[in-house]
Length: 249
Image 1 (cartoon, one colour):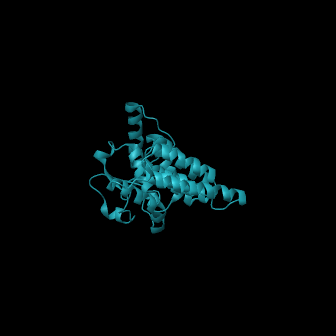
Image 2 (tube, helix red, strand yellow):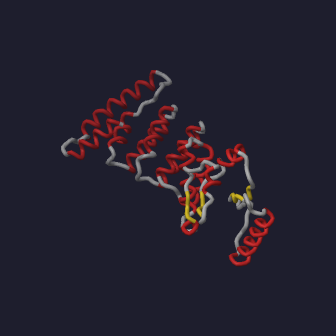
Image 3 (cartoon, helix red, strand yellow):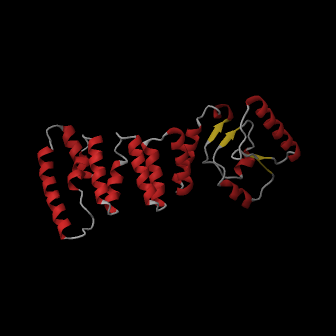
């Protein structure tokens, strides 16, 4: 927490914070850890404010506000919470909001740290796992990218958003057998999704090791086309829409 002490006696402010901390310890038996830090900030230069800006993640609104001082920090886009409501906001929600903001700012490393914390607290949802995987992808951490997608599928098996990038990127990375296993897993989890039925039969390597492998996958692909023709029904509008979506992807 940053507290602007402009126009306030710093020694008096420190005594007030010390008394507050002691009261909390005595009344609530709080655990004061090194992660909890309060900084008193005196009059700052433009450069100091610019450096501090990256460490300001939320605003807790206390009435009255010193709007003139706040304007110097240029933090309009940072989420603001009224102090009366702040205590009711779950920690996981605050962490997720911070992760999303850092993600939009393309700060992949720090965003990934926040998403990891959120998943540890709240197990996460498909969108969080997808965003975390994209952080790792942009950081060129391919092992973490794939493991995050797989973990997300285990936690949310009925959501297709994580299966598709896992299958496609495994194939692009030359991990074709893993891609095929992932397709078969997706078909079991999402039997009505035509996208994965199509990928099950038509997934082939990007590069072949030899003529024998090429012949094997050509035969597999041909058989797959025949199976898709036999299994694909276009009798109802829903079936037509499902098939069109699968082909389109």
